[in-house]
Picture 1 (cartoon, rainbow, N blue to C red):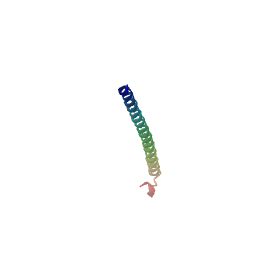
Picture 2 (spheres, rainbow, N blue to C red; picture 1 turned 90 degrees about the vertical axis):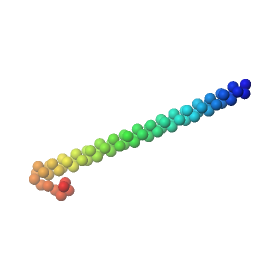
Picture 3 (cartoon, rainbow, N blue to C red; picture 1 turned 180 degrees about the horizontal axis):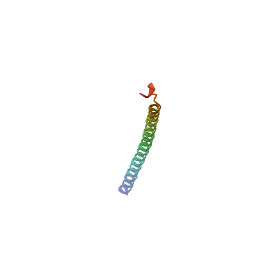
Picture 4 (cartoon, rainbow, N blue to C red; picture 1 turned 135 degrees about the vertical axis):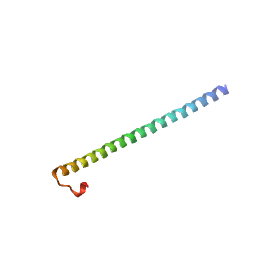
Amino acid sequence: MAIASLTKEKLTEGHNIMSLKISLMCSTRHKQNVQDKQQERQQKLRGFRYRSHDVAFLRSLRSGVLREECV
């Protein structure tokens, strides 16, 4: 009888540890997903900034006026 209750106690303790590990993994994965999305958004913005800079540079070349800020 004592062994059965002790085993049951150990099983619930093991279950609690596993559910804690799983929730920790899920929160870590969620944080990583959020970071990945932020990096992706920053890279898109950075690429857009470079493209708009290139467009301004090309326009100034086409018009024959090369502004100092584009060099």
